[in-house]
Each structure stands twice: as C-alpha cells, then as structure tokens.
Image (cartoon, rainbow, N blue to C red; front, side):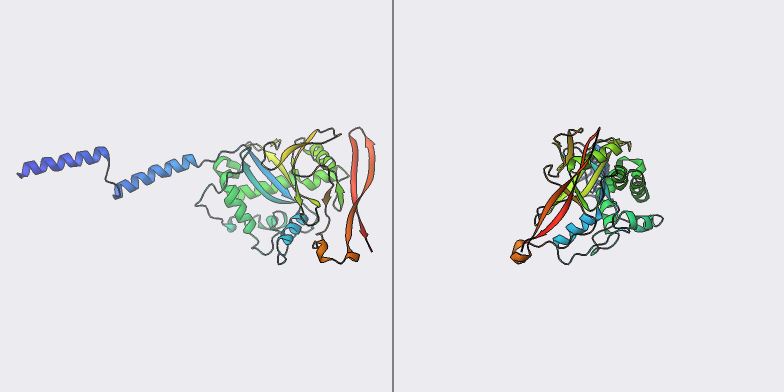
Length: 317
C-alpha cells in the first residue's frame, strides 16, 4: 500500500478513536471512567436525611443488657454510675433506617480527639468493657458521623461531631430533665405517662423513650431517650423513627408518646445493675421471687397525678 494511503488510513483511525472513545480497558478509558464514576458517587452518596437523633442512654440498663447477652461480658460504667451518657448522633430519614457508613474510605483517628478524650471517656462511655475504649467512638463516627459530615458543616470533622455531642449533653441532659420534675429518680418504677410528661415539660418537644424488654423477667427497663434536631440543629419532634411509634396515653394531658415501651406496665429506672436474672427452672421452688408493684399516690396538681411504683420483693416459701 502506498505510503500516503497508509498515512490517510492511520489518520482516519485516530479521528474515529478520538470521536467514539478509546477501546475498553485502555488506560485512557479507565482514567476517564474512574473520574466520571467518582463524581457520580460523590453526588449519589450525599446522604439524604430529615433529622438528627441525639441518643442518650442509661448506662446501668445498657450494662445489664450487655451482660445478659453473654455471661463473659463485663461492663464499664461512668463515674458516677447514675449519670446519663451519650450513645450517638444519628442522621435519620423518616420512616426508614439510616443512612449509614456514607464514606467507605473514611478511617477513625482517635488522636484528633485528644483535646476532648477525657470528657468522652466520662460522658460518651463504652459500656461494653470487653471491647477497646474507643471502639464505640469509632463505630459512631464511621456509621453515623460520616453521614452527618457530608451535609452539616458543624459536624464535618471528628472533633466537631463528638464536641457537639458533649455540648448537647451539657444543655439537654436527660438527667437534668428528670431532676427538674422532682419526681423521676433512679431506683423506682414509673408510668410511661409520668416519664413522658417530665421530658415534655423540660424540652417542649416530643422525645422518644426506648425500653429494654427483658425476655427472662418480662420486666421493662428505661434504656434510652432520643432527642431530635433538624439540620439547622434546632430541637424538633421525634416523629417518624422506625420502631418507636406514637402510642396513646390514657388520661394524660399529653395524649400520645413516641415509644416502644408497654404503656400498661411500669418502667423500671434502675439505680444499680440488677443481679443476673434466673429462670424459674434454675431456682428451687421455695426460693422463687415474685416482683409486685406498690403504687404510691402522688399529689394532685393542675397537670395531673404523678405516679411512681416501687418494687416489693416477696419470697414464697
């Protein structure tokens, strides 16, 4: 083939390649696709959520639940033990769960928290002592923090995310809310109505009350309280959380509550970690214990009756 004709064929082939793209698998093609895919992933991965669930936990119940799952589990509790601690800040889309793990390439760097690490050890406590101290922080940042960081500037770094949790605890502590009611204190049982009223009076919003249901004793323990914020970090109602639905409260000024608790049963707010539960088959009949509830009437006032229930332990011989 004449040289000029070869040159023309080569030029035509080059023009076609530039117009339609490089063959699959070539370095040029991979770089182009990688760049486009990366851009698409960044756009598609911007998490969509409606509110932030700021969850405080009662560490005594969390310890009890952790220990009940395995006899080898041991607990780490704050000092003092009867103080509410932080579980996490969870970006949440209403009527669903998540988003979660929004940045798959993220790594947790505990050294970034050196300035507040001592506060975190006291207030963002890892109750599961069998695990490393910072394992809870790592989990919360990778699962929830990376999603908040994509959308909310005030939470877009580890120090900001965990620092906000500490600031909210100081401002919105569940312990302070219960103390302000002068009625809700550890060591007693309370109705869901009484707990909800104390929280609503303090926060002015509908929070979510979460119970741990012990399958062995069939008792329910106060476990967590979830406070909700919008994306401008303003308090909002906690409607739309999966697993915590609005339920009716009979004879209450606040007609409904967001909870998974059984409204017909008292909620135990333990002051100490309960002893390991035993089934009836593990205990001799003469040693069986039955928990009874003794209702102590509260003073009547314009906002309704405050009720508390105290455990009475009866041994059947």
